[in-house]
Length: 289
Length: 180
Image (cartoon, rainbow over the protein chains, first blue to last red):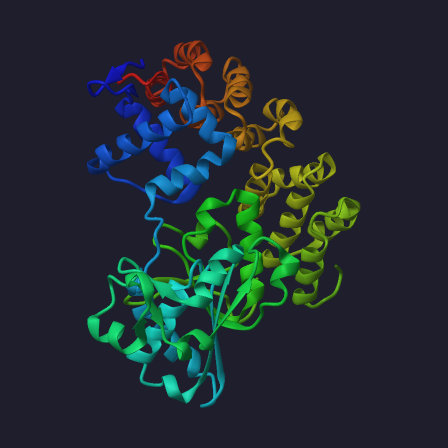
């Protein structure tokens, strides 16, 4: 079935049946779903991965993918997702936080109480800083509560960069000039550094989502952003990560996942909560059944 | 593990994850646990152990009358595709067609040639159309070209049924990569 196409390229031909087979596997394994109209997008990435792994056919590549040889699942997901992170990414979840989630949380708290928000994995800091910026710009009650934001990642180099808070234009592309002007200052190389007050307001720590002992130090979060990481894990690791996240949330707390992720496909521990701006997951207040 | 407080049982189950000598205690706890959250943690602890003894604890739950428990057992066993392999032949020839049907799903995460071999062995002689349909559904995703002769023979055996020949034609086209 395999032959060459595309002029001088040695790309393997992929039939529509094979694409369908691949898409069903990808959906079951990661939750990522692509319409038929994305066929060209899928073909190009599949061809790239087949070439990169030295596979001689779709069949050979698919076998390699299913056994996750050489962490091919991770490479594949990277090729299908936007790896770069930037400020205000998946803004609808930030909007959901200030329009719905926080008000629900503080209804059970006294003014001045602590609200704990966790960004894991936080990579180079764009997400926890986005949370802080969004709160200051969009939540009128921001000064009425003691808000603690923690950013954690397994990669200590990323954490060091996060603490430095220096970003290029691409990372800032979703921010208005006004916000950039008020919260960032110029540094060498045409980059900008987020202001010292914000840098000091976030605790950056190392954490491994699938290490239960490591995760024991993280407790009583009201809200967790855990986006686009569970799709990389195998079934056993996803279960463990879900249980760890459950323990890190206080009862009634919420967790936001990436747009292609669904906690109900991973674990029955959480309840789906639908808000106007986003679907999030909640640790139930109490056990049932 | 026998504390009346669910949080305590949950914490205990999580603490036993990966400890092979805890399998007997986890087995006892799983048998009497009624709280889905704690049951989930016990099953995760058994997955983290992942040895034949932990598989043997999980297998009887494939026969549970409670659909939620059966589904939880399937998910747990699917997370152990290598460890489950030696248990597959007896499961796929079990006297209970419901167990055979559920066992086909366990092949989904197994290595493709091994899953193909096991499921083809099943569909060559399986009489129950629903069990064959379940096996064919898994083969549609994971089957290798070695499955094609068995699929064709299965289609011939079930030619009079309304849905199996169609399901098999889809499986054959997916596996061969040719349009049906």
